[in-house]
Length: 321
Image (tube, rainbow, N blue to C red):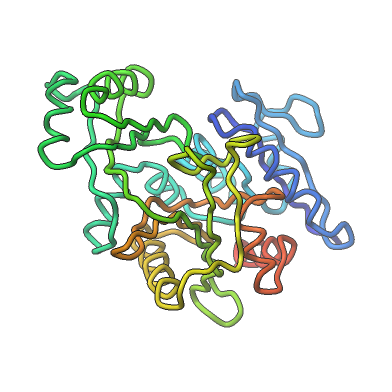
């Protein structure tokens, strides 16, 4: 009897479109002779659909043997979906609720990663509870970090809401805009270097933590950070294999593995780096890799003779263990 696999996609976060594409990639990659798939869509307002018909979460999930979660950001990574699945006793691939939520929160994750000795860009975190004006916040940042800066919402993924600020005079307004929109902001030093990403898979090819070869992310001219949802001339290119030295690849691998363990992630993860003259710095760790065609994770799999199909079947086996 074929296993029934529920594929969760869509969601209420700003990564809705990417999630739809990742979910579609999963649905097309799973072999029909081994699995029966259930396409479970959550729309932007949080309404669940099964086979195109409205269904409450309990009904939609009661028809599956296990779940592959293609929801990026929001309820898909903050622990909400994971807690629902755990209450219903449904196996799922990926990190547990607390670890997934921790990795999504850039401020909390940064504290743990820095305690673990992982090199990251220096940063300041502010929220609406701070008893400071935006000019005071900017002055605090400038006392330690010179421009330019990268401003990030603490709980958004796929580069959503990121701002590049080139001067100190523009920083107070940029901080204020971010606080108005998200309620909190991470002001990070901008490190000059090459961008890269590296995937991790647990218990793969006889290794407890298997690191895929890094993908070099070639940013278009005038683009300051990687945006996976960019289109046209603003879209970055991915190169696997990369031209990074063996030493740099080894350091990236060590950092990615250490970060994966520090945050308590499970089954797989995806680490984003900037490679400076001083070596690699971790930007963030993602609990749910993007799997649609053109993304870096499938290219990394192909580079080692694997595929999205093999990765998914391995993830299913990890979930059912």
